[in-house]
Image (cartoon, rainbow, N blue to C red; front, side):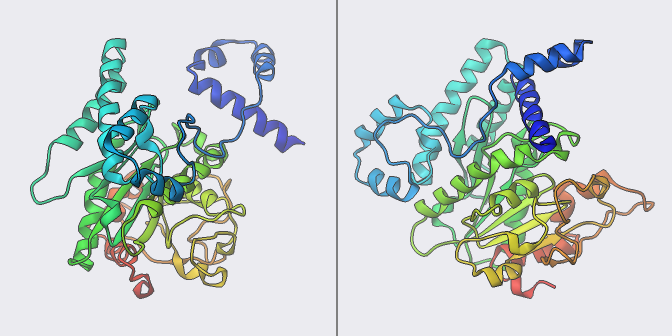
Length: 381
C-alpha cells in the first residue's frame, strides 16, 4: 500500500513540476494544501506507446514501412500537412523522417523565437547548426524525432544502410541534447571504425522520452518506467526501416539511461537489440541479467550479450541502491570489463562519470566498446 501511495504521489508531483508548477509546490508553506491539490489531480497514466493522430496509417512499424513505400510524394505531403510530426513514426525510412522533421524543426524554432523562449530557441538553433553544417570527411546527421517538448533523436549516418547501429540513450540532466550527444556520437563512430574500418556504423542519440532533471530525481524509477515503451518503439522502427540484412544493434545506457534501458528490456518486455551496454550505471531495475530480454537472443544466452563497465572513481557509485543490483556486480551476471580513470588524487571524480571518459581513446574501455558495437563482443574480457 505504501509503495502504491508513494508512486502515485511522486508521479503527480513530478508531472506538476513538468507543467511548470514548481513554485506552487516549493513556495507554499502549508504542505497539506499542496497534498490536497495533488490528490485532486487524476492519476497520470503510464506511457505505453507513442500517441499519434489517426491519419490512416498503420501503427505497427513494419506495416507502416510497407504502406509508406506504396505512397506517392504528393500523398506523403498531404499526410505531413495532416500531422506535422509524421517524421517521428517508426517504420518510415530515415531519409524521409529527416526530410519532414527538418521542416518541423524550422517551424518549432520560429515559434520559440516568437514566444521569447530563449532556451528552446538556442536548443533548436544548435540542432539546425549540427544538421546543416557538414564536418569534412564525416557523414551527415539524420533527424528521426522532434517534438514541441524538446525531445529528439538523431543519427550520425543513415541507420537504414548501416552494418552496425548503435543507440545511445539519453541520460538524466543535460538540457542541451546536441552538446551531450554530438561529440559522443562522433567518438563512438570513431572507435567503431578503428575496429572495423570497412563496416558502415551509424550512431543514434535516442532522447524520445522525459528524463530526470537532477540526480535526486534519478533515485526514482518512474521516468524509466514511462520511457521504456518509447525506447522499445523507437528500436522497432529502426529494425523495420532497415534495408537488407538486419544491422547489428547495440544499445548503450549511460548513467540513468541504463535504468531506462533495463526497464525497456525487462519487466516481461523484449528490446529489439542485439547487445546491451551499461556504462557508468548503478542499477537497471533488474537484479539479474536473466530478467532482461533481447530480440533474437535465446534466454540462456542473454548474459553473453549484456556488458557493463564502471570507472574506479566514477562518483555515481555513491548513489543509493534504488534500482536493483548494479550491473557490474558479479551477482548480476553481465560481462564486466574495466575502465580507466583520469589522473587524479584518488577521490571521487565527476569527470569519471562523463561519457567522454568511457569513450576516450586513451581509456582501455574505448577499445572494448568498439569491439562490442561492431559485433565482436565475444573478444571482450
